[in-house]
Length: 148
Image 1 (cartoon, helix red, strand yellow):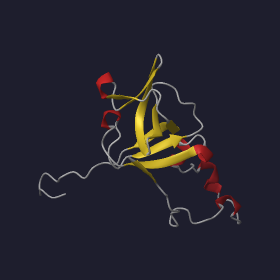
Image 2 (spheres, helix red, strand yellow):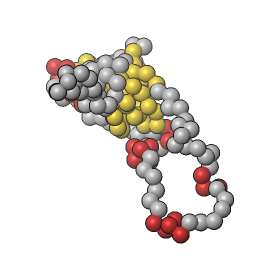
Image 3 (cartoon, rainbow, N blue to C red):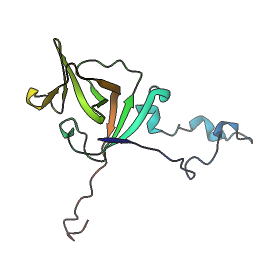
Image 4 (cartoon, rainbow, N blue to C red):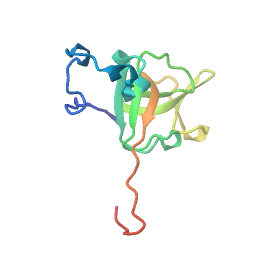
């Protein structure tokens, strides 16, 4: 299962509505200034067709998608066999690997055929292709104190 995320504006980091319209003199150090890396510039190629979801379970752990992972989905990418997709089948939203073999279509949770569901002939709504996943680091126990 997946759910859509809403990312609120960070007023501390994004203090200006349009930072390119700030007036005043230009600093001599401006030539040496580096652009700030924004993660969306790296992982989003089509902002209009990109959506973010959070994984609700560990079914896709084989592909590195655990509960709490952020799934980045692009609706503009043509879905082909072998891709990870977000789809709706029988009113259930899933993240799965799409496998097309001959006339049969499967949704898989790993690379083995024993973990695939045959969906040939079923009504499936493909939302888009998974382009990136972001997995948060789990809290690790402090070895010295035994506390988190």
